[in-house]
Image (cartoon, rainbow, N blue to C red; front, side, top):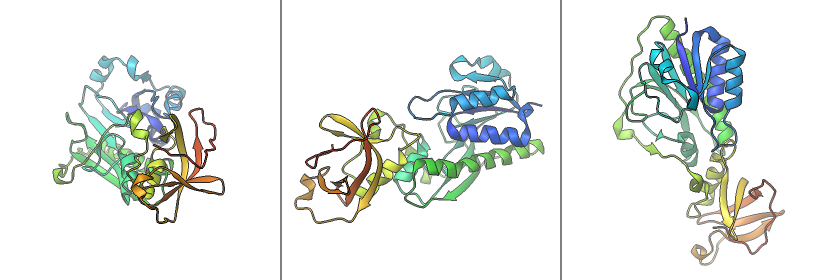
Length: 295
């Protein structure tokens, strides 16, 4: 019996789909819907498509998906990494990479890392007309330690996604009813969507927070960036250096103060930032002059 439909994107969706097929078999899946994401360097789309087709599972790109198929489907629908409205919310379970009610919305993991959250995780919840406000079915958590890059954090939470899918689907197979509990509105926060401008470094932040930002928006995201002489420079790898006293510091934020072993060291509001790997828009390594100022 085909009990599950998957709406999946990115490496988390791929991980869950692959793990589900390995444990429960492809025959348990009614269909798979996915979509490309040009805002990131890796979206998993081709691998998801190939995995479905290799296992004879009906696959649909989001823009070519017939809503009648969705309306006729009687099983559960799992949405993982999904960014669009699913009109028919009947039997729809959303998987969200934060411990709700904190970080409702978009890019919750990115914002969690920027904020140096020591604990993260995944929430399975019933879909609601207001995003990420449905009743919680279950949660899984993990501890974070820093420095932590987004790619490493994704690998850390991917198994939690499947743990939840496994738990919920097993309950369904046993004939158990799925129930949820209300979110704590007093703890709710919102994480907004990211656009092109949001990847630019905020030089009002400390060096430590800027490093966390660089680590949080690296691969598979578009990478942190700043402007230098009207050119866009991408920050791929940065580190921290012990601070020094800078006279009239507030006037010199973003300036190079030292060159350490070939790496520029930049003045921040608090601390110094070592630029270990920076590139231009073509991905070519950049060497900058001592008298440089990032904006």
